[in-house]
Image 1 (spheres, one colour):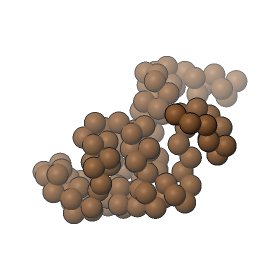
Image 2: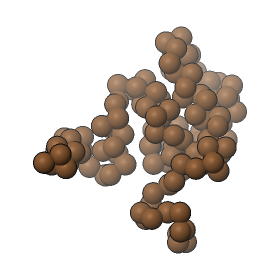
Image 3: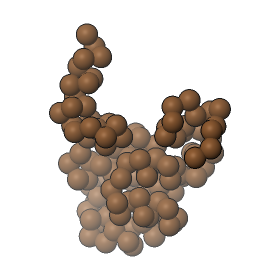
Amino acid sequence: MTSNPRQPVPGTTIFDGEQARKGYALNKMCYSFNEASNRKAFIADEDAYCAKFGLNPQQREAIRHRNVLELIEAGGNAYYLAKFAGIFGLDMQDIGAQQTGLTKDQFKAKLLAARE
């Protein structure tokens, strides 16, 4: 991995204009999950639903893996990805735990400790 002056924390993907363009289809699909009927359609035929939004191979693979870091690298925005995670009963703390390599309980404890 090469050094990038816009990437102050190693391994952090900055959501900028380039990432927004890259992730447009992915984020549009995740936004569609605001509607229960769309969540059901995704669960019924994930491949067809992803194809409907034109996800590229990197995005499709990240969806298959259910991996937040891969989804962010593929242009996903955390707020839209929360819609995707919600289909599986996950919340933002689950996402934060996955991003940091902690369990959800460890991540919660870290958040509480930071408040003190």
